[in-house]
Image 1: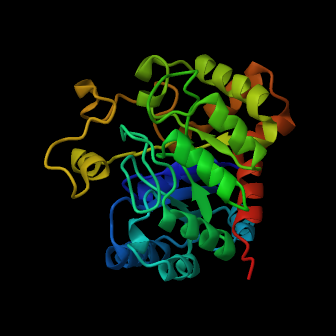
Image 2 (image 1 turned 135 degrees about the vertical axis):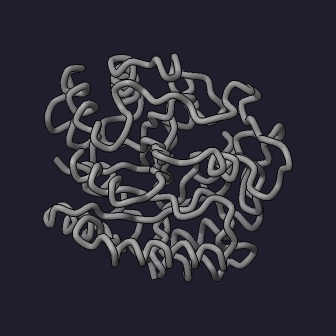
Length: 325
């Protein structure tokens, strides 16, 4: 079964790539950067070029959706890149086309905070999309870079959907009706994402799940079923937000970047200061078959399971990353 994970930032190694293949992963949206600037982003591309060279029997780069099919057929994992912030373009709109040509297929307009483009989900005031953001959305549409609003505020997300001529995605989050984390999304946002032709990737990150690390597979699959009723089966997928093997310093970089001297707790809960305990049914990439079996047990047809596990993501990439000019 074609299986696409819509978001990971693991501590990449040959062992993890082998686990991906063992778990049947066909492709993964790998976070390239969080707060890195343009020059630092180029170095992250360089890091990945070395990985592709050293592990060419296990992984290959994805520059277009067809590369995922090639990876699947060759028994390798296709890797497509996204940025969890707009920092790679700094304040230069021309960098959007440059980054897209290098292989950046997806970019979030903000990561939790107010950015030059949009308001993040942790800001007290939701100012929506900025003047620069409006032009950035138009340019991302033109060059075929998918807009991701996973860490954005409610108004910013709804604004982006209205302004974008292409589908907008939430690569890794869950419905706030399932668990009221600030990062999770309202039904109004989810309906708008579906209406735009976009997609929600369900996260297995425990802090975004009801009952945290004790969330059961049955509960997760119930959430998927309820969201399928809300958004439609063609607009949901998986975006695990797996950060396998990462040290605490990486969590600090994600949350703090260079902007804070203190640990940013986001939700305001100091119990969330470290990495959460993993789910019993999803601890690494070898556990994707558990999700497949859980969806089948819930009553999804085989065709519906195939859409959720990968075909919807493939369709999203096919439609969203072609250039308009």
